[in-house]
Amino acid sequence: MDTVSAVELLDAWEAGWSRDPLRRGLALLAAARRTTPTAAAEVSVGRRDRALFAFRAALFGTAVDAVSRCPGCDTEVEVAFDQRELLAENEPAAGDAATVRAGGRDVPVRMPTSADLAAVLDADVPDPEEALVRRCAPPGEPAPAAAAVAAAWTAADPLIDPCVGLACPDCGLAWEEPFDIVGYLWAELDIWGRRTLLEVHELARAYGWTETQTLALSPWRRQCYLGLVGT
Image (tube, rainbow, N blue to C red):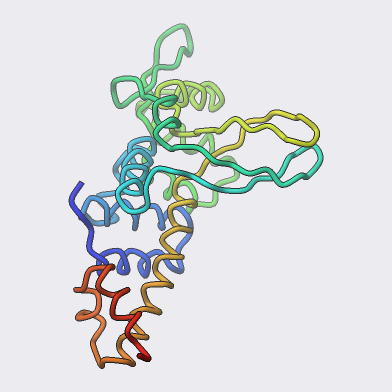
């Protein structure tokens, strides 16, 4: 993956700032692949998330640290793992479609994309799962049952719905916690973006530099100059 500049990261942050999680994911993927959100939307959900895991590794590393709550006793539970382990446990099968047994025959159903999800969410239909299956099933044929298709999609690419195994240190309850790479990466980018704009502000006030001039400096040099402010 090519190195993404600070300017490009800030552009992605701004593009997704007021958007829903789905569009934020597209802004991130578009930045990672240096493409448009429209082109990014045609990537399957599993491949999108794999690309975002790789993007995150390049930006912030592979260690994941978060907090959850026990569904049994509401105890705060620390979540810490390496995303490489999660990826190794959720390898996809070959191909761009899953196969569902329906009506005595095998029906190929293509893997959903962000464009499919956006179309269903924007339509505000009463049964979004069924609508998503209809979009991905062969045209002109009865769509298989939504539950069967969802299971086939997950079997074909488990990263569509990855989970992390957790256990409560107080009550001992074990459960599976879904992990949302879009939300986690966006939270990290938000922290980085706010910190970076603050650095730009401080250096502009001290030296009169423009945002472009400041961001052209390496993070190390920016920190050096920030350390000199006020001396």
